[in-house]
Amino acid sequence: VVLAGGIGAAKLIEGLVRLVDEQELTIITNTADDFELYGLHISPDLDIVTYTLAGIVNREKGWGMANDTFNFLAMAEKYGLPSWFKIGDMDLATHMFRTQMMSEGKSLTDATQMICRRLGLRCTILPMTNDKVECRVRTATEEMHFEEYYVKRQSGDPIEAVIYRGFDRAKPAPGVIAALETADGIIVAPSNPIVSIGTILKVKGVREALGRVRAKTLAISPIVGGAAIKGPADKMMAAMGVEVSALGVASLYRDFIDTMVIDRVDAYLSDRIRDLGLEVIVTNAVMSTLEDKVALAESALRGVSRG
Amino acid sequence: VVLAGGIGAAKLIEGLVRLVDEQELTIITNTADDFELYGLHISPDLDIVTYTLAGIVNREKGWGMANDTFNFLAMAEKYGLPSWFKIGDMDLATHMFRTQMMSEGKSLTDATQMICRRLGLRCTILPMTNDKVECRVRTATEEMHFEEYYVKRQSGDPIEAVIYRGFDRAKPAPGVIAALETADGIIVAPSNPIVSIGTILKVKGVREALGRVRAKTLAISPIVGGAAIKGPADKMMAAMGVEVSALGVASLYRDFIDTMVIDRVDAYLSDRIRDLGLEVIVTNAVMSTLEDKVALAESALRGVSRG
Image (cartoon, rainbow over all chains, first blue to last red; front, side, top):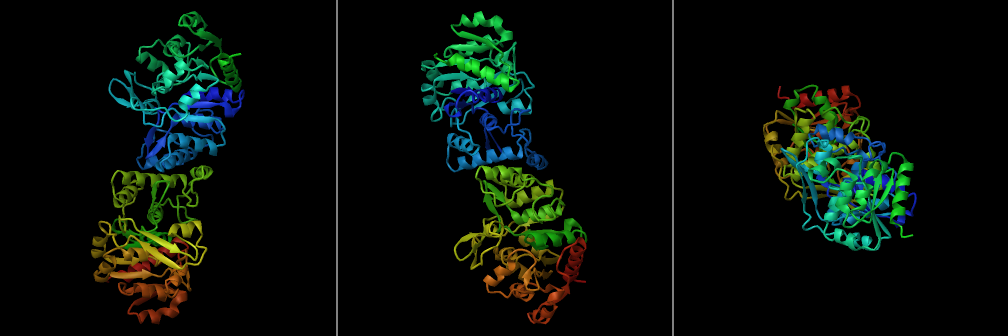
């Protein structure tokens, strides 16, 4: 079982599917980035993970579909529709299909399963919840949805606060708790610990389930050398008063993980992470090539194995 | 003022805008072809007229946008969404924009005006009604929406009946009756007399208004040499028990038109049309080139002029 955000998680899972049977994988994915645009239900993290595993992701960007065109978007912009979120023409079909299913009363879980099936995936991708939750960001002057901050504002302004909405009522989606309870091993992907993993942990019962599972649980640090590999995780950790380092990440997860995987440049933090009661694996945590992804996945699998 | 269906009307109007100030033109357009797909409000005839006047129509097909791509549709088909209606990627933005406005409570009239404005049009394009009306076709085995019969079934099966839905409650859209009452001349475009013009005439008060207007009213026959120039108008007339000829068209409109424009091949019908109490203009009624369009528009303008 993998707890996943977007691009970092997708890269790791690309490595994992080369080492284990795809059918053995369950990916619990953040949905706090979800939002509505043109009346469509957009699930950025679910799509990144799905497209990556289906081999149709745009590899340079890490999101969207390869060889997609943007003719809808260009015309939408002419009409004055919002165009900051870069939906490609093929990508749009996913949002339309999902929205159509949900308007017929199906859950996000059902819609995700159907998308996976149509794209030929054999793993299980689960949204963390089917309830509406939202992660928002407050800057000095404004409050906005995380995707708006990340994509439209390019994470420009300093963050004063991260605001979680809807989590008091959000139940884990069907299969989430059961997947954790029956897992052979649990890997927390190198995703943003505040907006991606942090939100999964905020869904009622998830953190508690992680605390009691028998499987070994391991997290990979998305912070390498004191900065986020991608995205604003570092800024957000700082805003939350968390040390921007692999140690800071470990401190956020210490109550439920057994092992922390950190990059070689952060090896000097090993002792302090061990002081938190965690095991440490030092390896290359930056995934550039497919070999990097497979190697990191291999370290993670070894870390959660009982052997 | 032009009463318009799709492709035939759009061609005529292309000629008209070269002869009169675009701002002087009001086009009352059939909306009985409208339907919902993927939760979007699709208005085939409004779009054909709008795209043609904006100079962005696909000229070979007569519908859709020029240089459009169909990547959304290809992906939608992979997901198992209906793909019989060939929505292009840029075209999709129009449906999205319209649907978005209507979901915010705007009428189809407002949405159409906004689309026209964004595309730089200066004429007035009015939907015939803002109420939901539908034209359906019954074959020996099935009943279906006209667009499904026309596009999906390629007008294949013989038609047993044409069914009009919603017309008992449909009010003319704002501006429709006023446009007729204040018109300098009214031209019934060479559109399908059953599903395009016939539906406009079925909207409460329209036929009556046409009967009492002071402006000269003229219709151009879409039937030339006993067959429809395009589409299933001939089959549908036959199904309704109307003679499939320019005379048959004249008989459908005789209560409110002054003049009938027919093609040279139908000149032999002139006397019988005059016997209905109508004037007859014999000219080339088949529009292949821009010159044809302008020439036919010129004949029509002369026919409705009071000079």
